[in-house]
Length: 103
Image 1 (tube, rainbow, N blue to C red):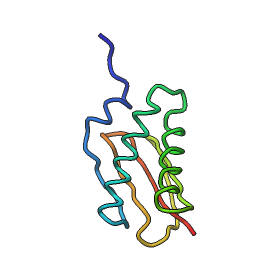
Image 2: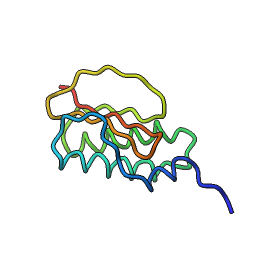
Image 3: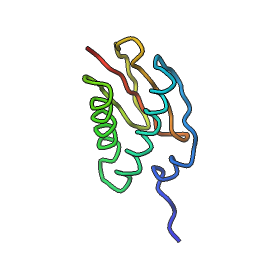
Image 4: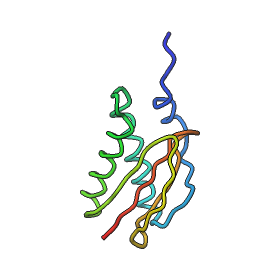
């Protein structure tokens, strides 16, 4: 029996919102999209980068451009965002997602 990778285990945990300036509906889309992205790329070498690309492109499609996304376990950030277009959350205890829109 193999041990699941940390990325797989992430999907079994609820999202923990750390900072947000976004509607509740859009927050749910962000969480759902992140879960789908991490599941899709969990076996890829660059799974965090690929997941960030997937989330960014999905939000560009759903909410128009220009979205930015960072997915990872250890990063600092300082960003400027459009009002009502920012979320920073964790899936599980270690994977953070930072998603924001600029004009």
